[in-house]
Each structure stands twice: as structure tokens, then as C-alpha cells.
Image (cartoon, rainbow, N blue to C red; front, side, top):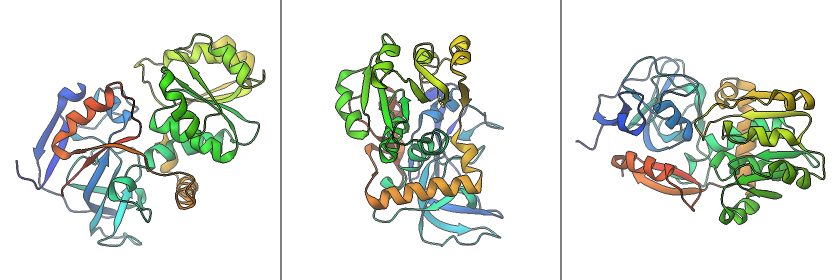
Length: 335
């Protein structure tokens, strides 16, 4: 296949088996849109859920591109677009991207969902930060109000969004508690911002949370697992606790432990970053935080491994397999 004008699409909702690399003819940017010459794009767990037909939306038709986190050089600006510079590097912000996926040599996107690549970062680094840090920012900093004395639980904390939540909580001074299935992840999570780490799959979790919070319980939970642990951590919720669920790594929707939620007057909130990106005021808050934290050195990109465009399936296999390395998995497009 020619090196130019390639795109990965899904042809059916069957996971990696539905992926196909094909040639295409680049479209022109329409009114309000911008076209990027793609330099790199990221893999995210939500993309796999979408590939399997169990995400918060499906595509309006198939085949369709996958992915919503990319970086590239602006090579075309549509009518009505202002403030976007031709020839400059921009990153896409994750949003409900029906038929506008980023897994191709060019990307067309609504100009509202572009942001200038942070200074001093490579293309791959610049394209790796937005999903993880923006996903974590709103529940941790804005909704849970991370601050000294606030106890926050982060499940599957070695995930990129989970680790970002620990970092943001540390910046805000909160008591951050991370979970992992493996002891060897403890040091990594403590370096990221965890005050405490629980190791296991739920056994003994309520007692551990009470110990980590001096009996107060957790005020917020940032949970990407799904059904796995909610019946356990719900026993250690503080009054008026908030549960933010944003994924189903165990591929099962949670069954709510209603008695514990009643007793704690807790709120269970299905959370999607996309809703905050679509709101201009919320979007600005998240962008201001990420740019500021990058500039001050409080956060930095963490890229685990970079694959070539032809290796998209191999990249997914790597991401899904148990690994001791952590960070973003990226696809490099072109030279």
C-alpha cells in the first residue's frame, strides 16, 4: 500500500478483528473545520470499547475511523475559522467524534476541538497528554474539590487517566489512594502522587480505606473498573461521597450497592470527558490547568511505547497485555 493517504477503520464491532488498513482520498476542510497532516495519534481504552460496540455512542455508519487524540500540522483551514495558524502544530481534544476519527494520514476536525501543541514537546509527547489529564482534571480538581483533607480513591491507578488523577490530586494537596492488582506497581503509584496504595482485587478494601483515611472514609472515587470493586469501596464512603465512573475495564457495568449509597447519601455519576470539552468555559479551565502544570514541571508526558502506522493491531495487543511499563501507547504517522 502507498505510504500516503492511509487510514485504519473498523468494519464491524468485533474489536481488533474488525480493523482494516485502507487507502483513502483526503477530504477538504468544511466551514468551521481544520485539516491536520497527522504526525501521531494515541490509543485509549475507550477506543477499544467503541471497537467492541459497548461505548457511550456508536458510529452512524461503518466503516469508520477510530480514535480522537492526535497531533499534526495544520495544512488547511475551512471558512469561518479564525485563530488557527497554517503550518503550526495543534492537538485534538477528545470529543464525540462520529465519523471524524483520527487514525489516518490526515484528520479533519471542528476547530473548537483543537489546541496549540505545548511548547518544548515533541509531536508524540504533545499528542499524548490531553485525554489522560483532561479526563482526570474535572472529577478530581473541579467536582471532587481536591484539597488538603479530601480523601480520594482512584481504582486501576496505573492507567494513564488514573495516574493523572493521582498527580492532580497531589498538586491540590488531597489524600490520594490508588489501587493496583500487583505489588510491583506500588513505587510507581507513590511517585505519581498516591499517599497510600491498596493491592488486590477488593478483599479487605473497606478496612484499608478506613485505615488510610483515619476512619473518615473516601469523599470521591474515580473508577474505571466497572463492576469489580464498587461493592467493596461503597462500604467505606464518607457522607455525601461522589463516585465518578468512566470506564469498564472488567467489561461489566456496575450493579449499584444501593443500601450503602443510601447510607452515605452518595452520588453515582457516569462521567464522560467529552461533555466538558464541548462546553467552552469548562474546556478553558481544563486547558489552563494542563498548560500551566506542564510549564511549571508539575506534570510531564509519559510515553511508554511508539508504534508505526502499520503496527496498529500490534499496538493494541501490547496495550491489552499485562505489562510492567506504564504510560501512553502512541502511533507515529509518516516519517
